[in-house]
Image: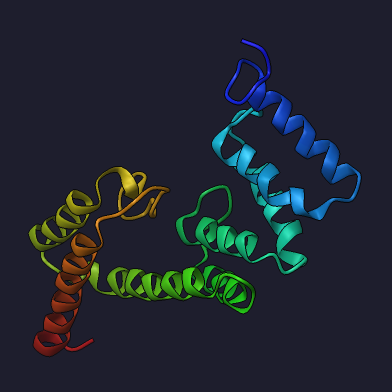
Length: 180
């Protein structure tokens, strides 16, 4: 056992060290401490505390923290769902070192907003088909459905392109047939 890498008690020690580091003014420890709260590594899952760490880091223009806040707002995880705030945080991440992840998240967010705007006007069978296809392609990476957002891990990019193309076709069809 012991406290070596992956040993018993390592996660708790790591979380304690990040807490001490933050108290001593090391702002670089805010995001890893937020991650510890997010994943429950050594702390227990606490999305509100994770959000607090990410907010503090975001104010210091740490791109990863801004991205995480955008994700939390987009999917209502630990923070109220607010797509405008999500976009603001994703765009803030783009101005730092997180340009590509931020740009991809903004693109996904726009598709998410488009889907929300047309979903209620579509036949339930079509909604079930599209959401089932996306969830089937992305598997557990959606973290609880289309409202749950993309989770960590590799995603088959071909499946994403196929699903998003299908979603775009549905939206275009809706606009052409019924208007918005």
